[in-house]
Length: 207
Image (cartoon, rainbow, N blue to C red):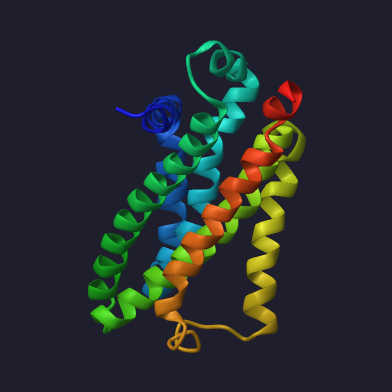
């Protein structure tokens, strides 16, 4: 197992005791939006997933895990990239659960929900998730969760909501852009990882 994968697995194990909070958030969002199946998955990715992927940073600040990272035989590059791999894994899990719930709710409401619509919703959800992670993670890695938790949560949400309102975006309006959202999101996260590594507070201290 690579060092990056080990860090991602450590993040998963760190978050595991708090899984009930994540599931509770998922349940609440699903219930509130149960009559609007097309909105459930984007809402989960926009509201629940960013909170879950931020847990390792929150716990690291409280439990002093940065000290543990420092003594482990790990390069800082592996630690930073491992956090991003954890985030991608969390998106896959949230996306799978959200897709299942969306299909169940659509069937219960007798609303049409074909493969094309599902693909569009997944792509839009991925784009929003990429914006969240791209903004949050460099801030967390540079300053720590405690110092920027509110800013790192509100800022990406504000960016997404402003884009939706100003551009009058919807799944239908984004139909022509859907194929581009996947590579654009991947490029955004890759660029964010590079920025996070450059801004990493421990790396700067070493330099």
